[in-house]
Image 1 (spheres, rainbow, N blue to C red):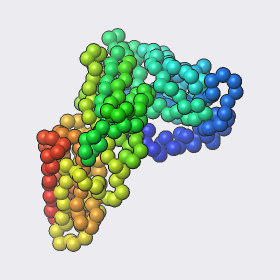
Image 2: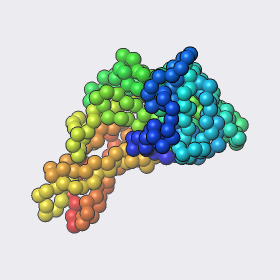
Image 3: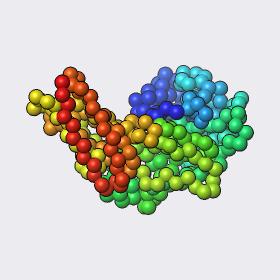
Length: 314
């Protein structure tokens, strides 16, 4: 499966298409509606669990509106439901070879575009697969591990806002969703960087029991070239014969699935840092004109800092 879905640039382009190229009527990008429940616009993308690829030809329906993915100008797997009723409570996905998905639709914001992100569906080739997986987790600060209230969590088309305890829970997800690098949603909160949710090596099983994602740490936005403290995997990259240590690329890779956790470029002091959950990682460093290096690092607990320094030679 792809590691990252719906990057900000992609989403901005799609919204621009919705509000511009497609010349959507009033209500799609803001504005009022007629009688009954106020209209809302719903967008997202349908993705097959088995392949991790966007699915064309699926019919998505909610709030009295339908759209066939892959039609129009939106691109593979994308859909838009214009002027759907904002009091809609369910979303349905049907199609040839697709196991029908009917999932709860969290309250829509009237007169706005409601982005559900990637929605995963099952194909009919696996007769035992079903939408019976439940998941739960807790959103916490990466610096203090305190729960984060008011965080918006999107998970395969489901949307929820965390309460005072930072917890969220979703039901009716596809059994079998999740392999290494599987992007399934994201977390946004005021004053924090966007956190993409990946399942890494976890594959969702049928519930009960509930699939527990544990604590998911989100960090304040990075303002420089290296993350601000605290970081729990950090160090310094020196360049033999150089005093300006800027421009080294440092990449952190999760050993369990080979997924890139993040990449930073060093400033003149050569320092780098990442804040991650416990696990085993590979730190890779490279600089033009110098021999690249890498080393494995095991982080037993998030509060046990591991420091790895490097000296690159031409």
